[in-house]
Image (cartoon, rainbow, N blue to C red):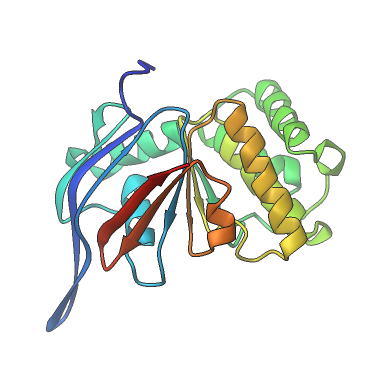
Length: 230
């Protein structure tokens, strides 16, 4: 990737939800740019628009108006299949609720994106084991989610997000279901992943979580309230 091209370049993003007789403006002209290698946190209260922005950036939703480029590609004009291809190729997701297959081992959960990408079994197994080792869970690869702690499940989810080598790692309240000790472990892991050169965009309402990032963007009522670098 050309380092001069931003990972995210969004301009004038608006999102309006039609709720019958009422229209709700979730985003009102948001400009947002993310450079390669940044670790940025989007902060905001419930209903501020932060999750709507994350969904648009992750190609899970479309803006009502405005433009959005991911890795120099104009995403907002793509059809659903093209967006799915961009999403699978360039974005890794980490969710608050882990979203792991309950009957599959940690290894198989991590392998899954590579199965969809039709990678040969030997290669995907090696790659999945490598990222499980990276998050400190190589010795738990055969365990199912119900045999793992909450912190271990989130580390499996992070490994799954990393296994395709994405350009962008998106995390939505990744410590929201964890106690403070496991939450700190996960935040430290994100810090290590960032040091490895990954670009991370994390959404939270928690100031303690946000303090792990080098840049904090605060959203309120669908607009960017502040953009601070530390």
